[in-house]
Amino acid sequence: MRKERKHFTPEEKVAILRRHLLDKVPVSELCEELGLRPTVFYRWQKELFENGAAAFQAQERPQRQVEEKQKRIEFLEQKVRTKDEVLAELMAEHIALKKSLGESKAAITTGRACRADVGLTTRSRMGSWNAGTSR
Image 1 (tube, rainbow, N blue to C red):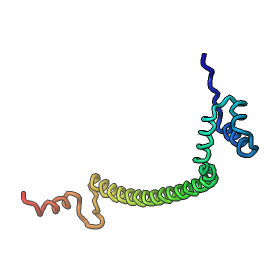
Image 2 (cartoon, rainbow, N blue to C red):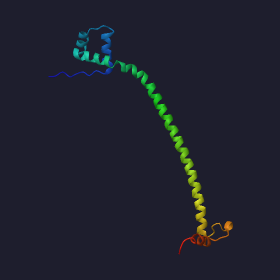
Image 3 (cartoon, helix red, strand yellow):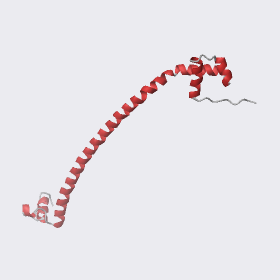
Image 4 (tube, rainbow, N blue to C red):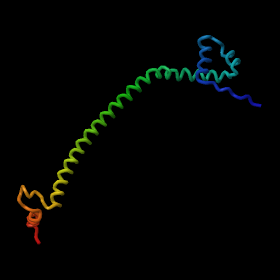
């Protein structure tokens, strides 16, 4: 029957390696005590030394990530402000155009298009507009 393997957490692995490196506990004693094979221990040690730089980068990285995120947030906020300004300007122009078209349309439908200013009725104005066209 096969013996079930024990799975060690990363923290446990570091603690085991620390006991060997700092406390000078021999690998044979650690392996016997924990039921480890020496090859597994040396593989953990190799991984620790190969990936050891990541432990130091982890301290610097969050600050850099925060700064990058903050710059991104500021950029996007400025972009939204610019978009809002452009939209407000376009909406103001649209409303002004709509009002001016609405007044002239209302005047034409009621038959009183600028009668006071020009002295013409809508029909006479339409006739003058069509005067240049061939019938």
